[in-house]
Image 1 (tube, rainbow, N blue to C red):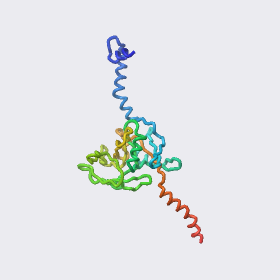
Image 2 (tube, rainbow, N blue to C red):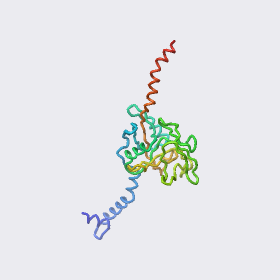
Image 3 (tube, rainbow, N blue to C red):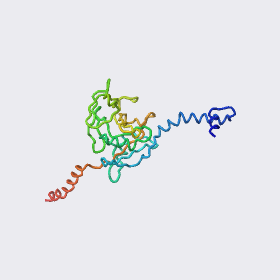
Image 4 (spheres, rainbow, N blue to C red):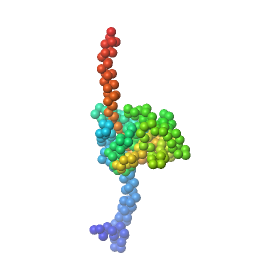
Length: 248
């Protein structure tokens, strides 16, 4: 059997001509087309599956685009419309290396692909803030220069594309083939290895482009911090007293 297949692939003498050409085209498909298709449709067993991070107690869900791709704004709205066990969702905000490593290990299976996250500098160019979740409004990075090299100041955790050993950043660059309007953040999930994830700035409409590698968005269901819960409970307990005082 193996000798017969080999003879077809090599178009050896005596091999049927039609079968020979079929084998040739099939070989070309395996070498050239199949790898591209595999990259365009990354495989993961954890799409649309909610997973809890045991470190912070939050839940995460990786959503792959369906027949229609979603922009940053559309992904943010879709994430905000979701809930899990009564916990409202939002585009993920990655605020520590431990959280980044959890995402890499848990969802980083298959080919590399980009994911919308809840960060933007659309309000003030160069000032990157979380725009979703409990951290909304918090500044975590300020770009100082992008020419000739990218420099900036971190006010919290960040994982921009960079050579960490040389302290050389190549993101956020605010430049690309669509122009200098890269105001929204993505991150690239790798292959289950820590420290491979790198953040990137892109236009909000980038996922609609033919060259886009942004295929997903990630929802985080953030459990309120104990301090926030305490403040909420104190507010609820104070309501009856306020109503009695108002009645007097």
